[in-house]
Picture 1 (cartoon, rainbow, N blue to C red):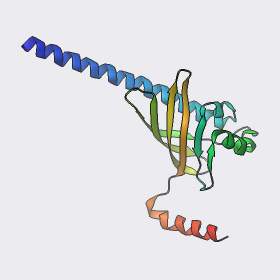
Picture 2 (tube, one colour):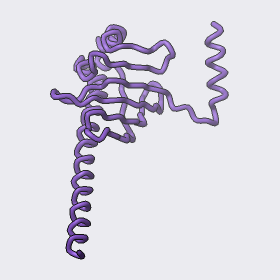
Picture 3 (tube, rainbow, N blue to C red):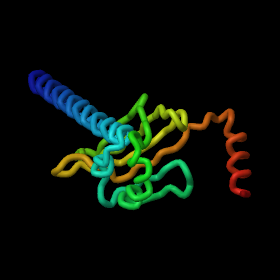
Picture 4 (tube, rainbow, N blue to C red):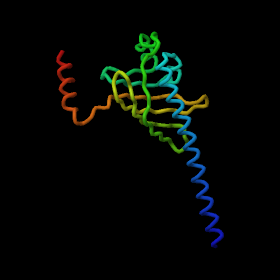
Length: 160
């Protein structure tokens, strides 16, 4: 009985170790994919849009910025015609996945030269061809201490 119990403990312990390694591998792959996606924008490479699913959605910081991939590509053309569209550098990212690893979601803190600190979250679908971004939402990280001032600016802007 003691041997059976020891074997079960060892088996479940190894299963957990393999699961943790798989999660670490998946996290590394996702981080590389999302970092490359951000780098595509920083270097105005149209491969940026190829990493988004055809039915993918991008939500920007302005309340009017909600696009399907192809609409987003059309809107962003003027930025991708330059040397750099925009620059997002992740300073922290958390990655989560469904049990079968086919659906992955993440949140990230971003350093951006034009908007300051931002936060974003995204959903990635894993397909036979690799990863594709299904949903991405970007927001500016506003400290709570200045939220009233920002709200006032937004209200004033809305009156125009």
